[in-house]
Length: 202
Image (cartoon, rainbow, N blue to C red; front, top):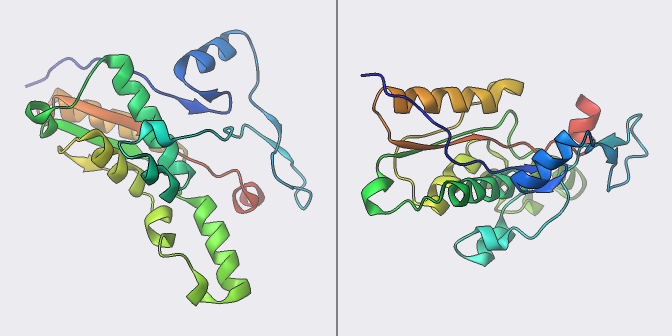
């Protein structure tokens, strides 16, 4: 069985801010999201980037307190997914939950957390690490949290294929629907690698 697949909702968190409208309007207006970084990057030869601005992610979570636990890759994924569901005017109810997949890619996972916590361990010892270190740093956590927050109980999978991770996730999710394994999929990717480790590495 081969079914047609359609994109019915879109959500974006980008260097322009939160929302599809600001992203599309800025792109068509020829604007650039690249600017001076919000943190001290004087140790680097490059001090500019398309950094996503800080925003309050609490309204995009079922319980506002949960937003305080997570690092940017997870916050961006949950926010974009909520925006996509709103755009599609779709609520994942009981009858749809088991047929809704979550495929969210991330090339490196929580690099903010990795940088912060490994630096802390080097300076103060590994016993000073936060208990949220591993949950916030592993690549598949954005996918898992999006699944929990949205109520999706279908196939859940994280693609980790470098710069192709988001496109890879969308392609795999489309194939899942096309062949009848799911009826709906939240698909895309998340990355937040604009910190000293990410900038220095690239």
